[in-house]
Length: 206
Length: 206
DNA sequence: CTCACGATCCACCGAATGGTGGAGGCGGGA
DNA sequence: TCCCGCCTCCACCATTCGGTGGATCGTGAG
Image (cartoon, rainbow over all chains, first blue to last red; front, side, top):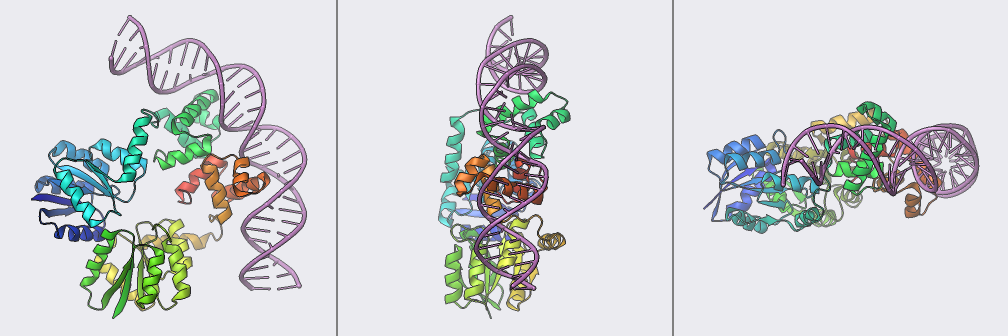
């Protein structure tokens, strides 16, 4: 019998999931939670085998909760179930130790199979998620900005010219230009506008 | 008896909603659909009183479906139920003729009450949505980009130069520059980079 | 009909940007 | 210890961009 805990801030989604697993005889939903912190508590208390975790939640989000669970309850598998499959969501979740990543448009049947696979320690990924992962390994290192580069990009996003950004960081204009060149390389951007766009897509900017 | 149709592309959400309304004796879920076009069909066929509509769906989205329903079945009330409450989602939905706008973190009880209100022709808005609406009436016009301007901004965000954007839209480079000037004015941006940033913050860009 | 608005286009100018190819210093990990 | 990544800075140049002040045309609302 697989002991499952559902973590999602939407009551409606929790209801739908509970319903889905009602039909599976080998899966029992032992608990629910509406945010990450609560989810960790439930998973530990109830000795969950698998945690079905949403990523975007108020309070402690899914990534943080996943990482915490990996430490505090290494035997529990975390299966991400979310609406989004952007690179910026997938990678942190996998790094945090999620064993699988599904999208909410998954059919109930896929879901139960994924939970069983997760309980066995197997990885289940939605097809589009696989794409993102492959894209990532092909250019290792690329795509991660240094702290300084993030600062520069943020200043540029806020409408600062190179000169203004330089003053703000107490460095020369030339350095800003160099940082920007590196940012363009890493993000695959052609100019500051597309770099800012990529920054938002990858959630590097606010 | 209120005849309800549920339109959402996530089977899980549909299940949860069906469940929610199973307890309400005066509401009967007569149909479901996974996208806007299907939703319109169901609503017309089944003479729905209220349609519970998600905004973000593959194929025909919720806004387009809402607008179409207002024309083809004026007696049917459309109640938006979605995850997002950003200005760019709320306003088009209201303009398209939705009678209410709820978020998916609503409690089951709120949901049934909202459906009853919608059936009576009353407007129900989630509190945060009300904020957005109020914010909008205070500065009319400003902050809303025209379709063309959105296209231009998207192209710029994707790294196109003015010349490239012009070719893509089959117009002159001068027009791109004019559009950009208007975009800067409306968004309070100084250059294309900050305009793109504002575009993402206001969820005008993908 | 008239007005407002959106979309299209024009010219000119200074300033900013992007591209290239360097350079040195500094700190952490192999 | 040495190497690599990161941050800093330099010069030169073509291209692009932003600012300004116009203009015409079509459409839909009043």
